[in-house]
Image (cartoon, rainbow over the protein chains, first blue to last red):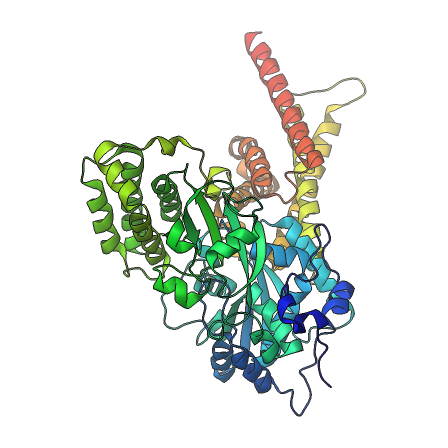
Length: 439
Length: 183
């Protein structure tokens, strides 16, 4: 039996949307809607061709990489979990930590069955006995909706390994994969030192496959339509599609599905184009980088190209900074947020990030008598690469990119004091601004 | 009875039991204040206040046990058993859960001293019973901080009504105490 195919997906000009094919503005896709659109969950059980190892082969051949930020090849991760000792655990990470990202939430609130299919397929492939779907603990409506979706699946006995819904604390570092793994094992939701990585020793010491929910949604489609279909979009080196969240000074902010390798500028055009003259693009989120508008416009959205440009693909975030905003002030606010959000475990986060945030705030809001730029750069060098997890490194990457993209601005601030644009209302979302939920 | 651990049933039970606990605890506090203020009238003898206060307080403990038990059993967020008794021992919403633990610890102290009242003597029992005035607002704050339904209008209205009732009772008690003192 060949799996069902979406006719539209065969034609090159209609390669997208894939994940967002059935999206409705208001309604959550029921199990029936979902199966009508994509076909039933392909049975990878039984004998012959459809062995667990074969599914991993297909995923590996598809070239799917993690869509949560790391960009690690999913097939390779599955293979090492499957090869690990003892029964494995599958963890779907739907606790979107990036304030400027909305894609995981969109998937979970609109097409939960794509994600749930992906979890079941992943559990099958690595022979897991336990499967978790993690969301933010305070997302009450989402929990209600997902419980409902799970009940629909239980009624027809769709998931051999029951999918357990878990709520994790809503902090930035809590959605880091080792933090989730430690929390699911009964510990605090804080990152742990790696190695051992979760695929070696994860939840309660078992080999654990942690995947972003978008990655698992892609897996649900790859299992149905195959690896060649998946490679039909994107670049040979970065195949497939990805969800991106576009915000800032654009006409139609929102979540869009793009082919990997699409230039950042074209992504902005997809979102209605700039609403005013853009000065820079923040690509990849708060662990990503600022790219000057002219050069950033042409940079392809994929891990390799963005890394070469000094940034990261991250969770696929694009924020357009208008010329009327001050990039340094925006960066200072974000770094302050990241400093406040540290887990309080290592020196670079406990002492380094607050100092870096102070220095940057000085530069942005007070001027530095010609010494602030130097101080920011020096502090960045002291923090980089010294933490237990990548939290401080991500912050430093953002700061360095700000000094590059807004170099002339930074010197102006340093010598003459804050520019008039710092008075403009903040652009980048920082949860602490509105959220009094400090426990 | 089968308790389904993979579903929202426990979650709904937790929320319901929490709200009932708040309501009963408020009533119990009101009756306690009336007892202390020696409230009585022709149609409401004092033994009625005292008896209701005792029995409602025991009912509070029943619903509190339900509330706490279903919270721990519900696996959506991991709340270890120790966090039920030791404040701030949970990693999920540490502060607000901690308030809940403090309130229930105080309630347990009230229960224990009331059961042992004959052996303790009136003065020490009375001293511990003052903690009731701390227990109630801490429990209320716990609900406001972490309650799933805290943002819905009717739950918020219920909370405000509870607070208003206790505030009214407390001021009645203060006024009568001052009058008695002045006499």
